[in-house]
Image (cartoon, rainbow, N blue to C red; front, side):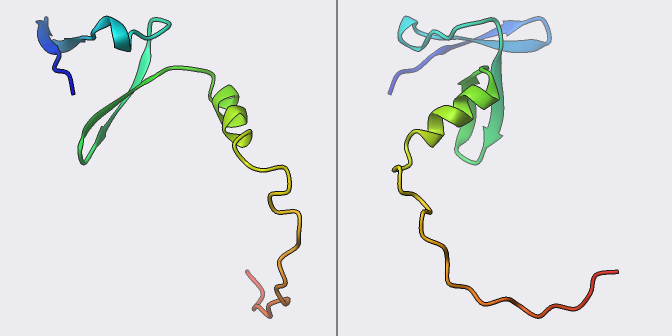
Length: 76
């Protein structure tokens, strides 16, 4: 695991990323998670979604689930 420099920039902080972690573009997504901070390249969300779909096998969900119809009360 590498360490990075945290730089004060006015009232904000900036992180200097090593060359290995350079990102494309001028913006990134940032999210606070229990383990720390998650930083992700800002890309077209649909392109990323479609790329994830390629990981599923071609026969994924081909067979129907054998569920019986459920009796439910009417929603009003």
